[in-house]
Length: 387
Image (cartoon, rainbow, N blue to C red):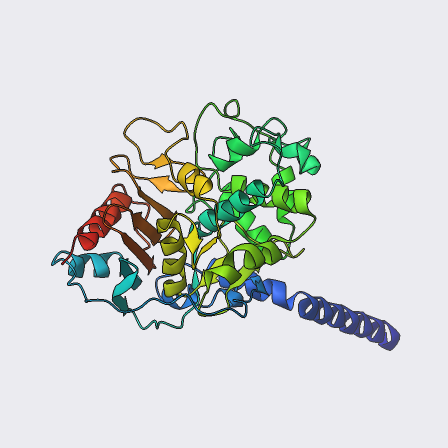
């Protein structure tokens, strides 16, 4: 009897030891998954959006050795009276306004500071579009009509087998992808769990096999399209997006602080939403586009690409907010008015006629309610006209 008890006890000890070993081995993955599950909770969302490195794997970027792109202070504007309610309702955390290349307003809210590195979410898509344009000008891609499989052949058995570079730039791939952030089993949330657990985003993209329409026929916002653009860039150049982005865009842009990228477990940058920068640096990127891609005598982003990517060229439904190459255009836009947008209220708004750039960050948990995006653009227009 004693020997049996010893055997049972010994087996239990071994099981506990194995469980502890597995727990320690998977501790980081478990902690990241727990952090992701509470990422958008009301009590944590503001802090989380300034500390994404606690929930995901990340790769550091450098600002380079060049001078900081100066944002001299100009005559300060007064925000419209209606902005007070908007700031509270939309849970704004940062607001920077540039007019004529000068900073005419800057403020931070809900306990955040100017030094916070804030998550871009889908504003990062517009950064990747700029990089894509630079590489296209350098001859990296033969044509925007090339199939994505020319540069990312591993997608040959996926829903992207017939999509072109232009299709994915315009979010017109026709690939089925559920973007419902509130549904646990949606594609966007499954993708988030792959990211948090250190899985492969490339392999996740390869698992997508359904199409709702022919490529190029119908516009539908599909975030994974942007990851496919990242795969194309890596396949065409043999280099990481992190290295390319800092070398060709961020270093010459003159950021004031080193940013970082969220990555998957295979060092692939989360290009569809993983950049983290200071709000003033988001504004600098907007100013670069306002200046047609030119800064300090250097053409960083080709002017033709700035024009093409910010023009409403995708086949969006009549009356809706329109789309270019990973940039948004208001449905009633005046010439030279466009914006980058990310979930929960991240924006870079550009108005060429008023020579204004507005960068804002937020933790708006109501961002998906009907008309919220239109309210935001209306507020930016009011701010752009403020004396």
